[in-house]
Image 1 (cartoon, rainbow, N blue to C red):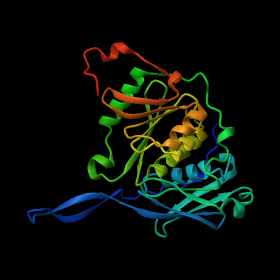
Image 2: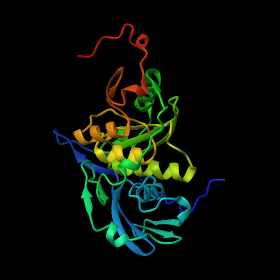
Image 3: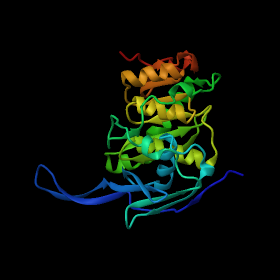
Image 4: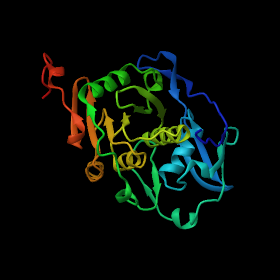
Length: 281
């Protein structure tokens, strides 16, 4: 049985209505994404304040601690308690975090919406990441994922201004979908849910609406995921890290079009799927 720490289920409204006036002076109400601070306390020590939509605060906190390498095993966490009245989450661990002062002394501000940050050297532990060498993704699975994302109900379609991340099985089945004000929050929330469910990333496929930066690639690697997809592009460092990890990096995923930038041996092409489809310049 998979261990689960004690968790709250803190619900909060994900959108707010605001009054707007258009170019003709007409007044109407529209929905915009909520954005609120969530200060993380670990064993009563303030660690960081995350700006979040608030859709999955417990999973976000767990994934943040996991992807920042503060806590290696979920069994080391006793409880995660979110209280929106004070905009804080209290994490209780069994044995604390070793050398927390030294590990939080250096912070790297990363590129991205909502501005993410990582503690310590950005490339720390990358050399130790090992992805499944046998994982493969077919072109038809990639297209199934693109179509699923296209039809997925989302805060973005309702209110815009958010990023979405999703985890898929090796056959393209949607496992998790999370939206937040920054893609780094959304990926952390999925990492937290995987941790809670005892799910390995060996054959999973990760999709994000945002850029495939070094931060996103490193977090995907830490989660053991060999495939990263995006409707957007990548960065030079994101590409470099993906090649180092042997990860498939697929950008500009729209319709039947995509660009495979790294891990070309991991994708099984099916040319017949493009019969009758106009080539994209």
